[in-house]
Image (cartoon, rainbow, N blue to C red; front, side, top):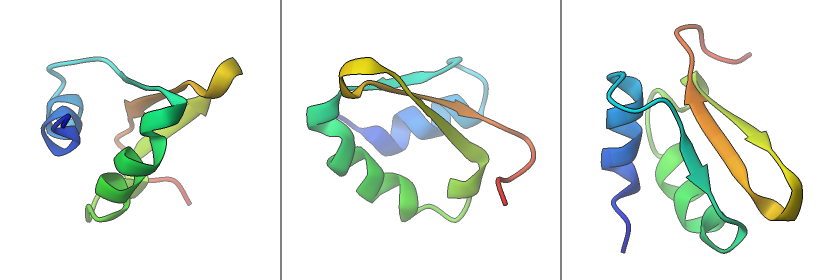
Amino acid sequence: MTDYNQQLEDLKNGEIESITIEKEDFLDFRTVLIAREDFKHFRGIAYHHGITVYTYTEEPSK
């Protein structure tokens, strides 16, 4: 299983620029994402065929 929490930490720390999530992995990823205290800092942009690309922002979403 993919360690999404580690990927999110790497994204937050600037070690990677983005995380690409496929449609079939979205629910597992989302479960990890919303359990984090800083989840509003992660911005997901949806693309065709269920692909979502997440980036980290300094300001939380409202």
